[in-house]
Length: 275
Image (cartoon, rainbow, N blue to C red; front, side):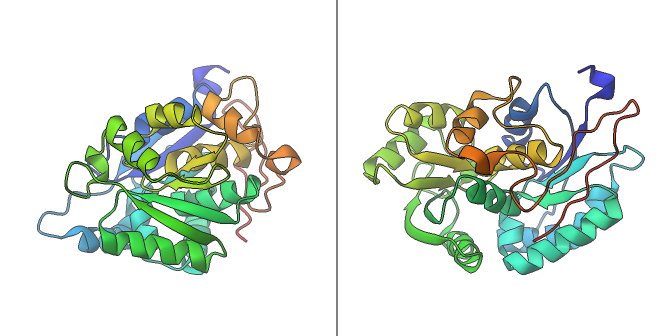
């Protein structure tokens, strides 16, 4: 598809997050053009204060796309949405979708969409967060109906810092956990680089490996009717699609069901049906 007519995916990302844009961009190229709006820098606030403020200013940050008509948008910050219940998250995204005139999904809800697509009901949570935020994440998934069997706490050196976790640290700590071969692993946090780790860990077993950015790309493709196993799909998406059978076909996840759109006379934005 020509650059000018490719669907436009908006990504809202924290100011210091270096991973979300390149990972999501790699996952959806060449099917989409990716455009970004960043949350404001909030000096003087601790992590929880920043996450709370992100939810307050999210409508304004989405509004910064201005006259750029989007076909879909994803909020690439799971931490702020873990402060909400899944029901509150759905309500917020429904309101944002109405305002934006295009479907808006949080990365957390995109993970739920993808987990349903692959038939996952139980998770091993692989978390680089500070303990209090890991517990919020745990509570969010349990409230959404998923069972968290185990939590693998990932450190960058001696501290919790998702932006600083190296591939070597991530792979080593997951392997040290000696997880079951049939486990579904959820690597939470949009700011932790995962591609190389997924490639390495994927050679160890046939486990389902989910990440926030992978799920966001899955949701975006599904929303616009582009199959995850299509010829232009990223290998990590095709690997997930192999685990879905018929459940992973676009429009059959029960949460999106849009059609592909473009700039030159193609159908307009899909309407998100929030469960």
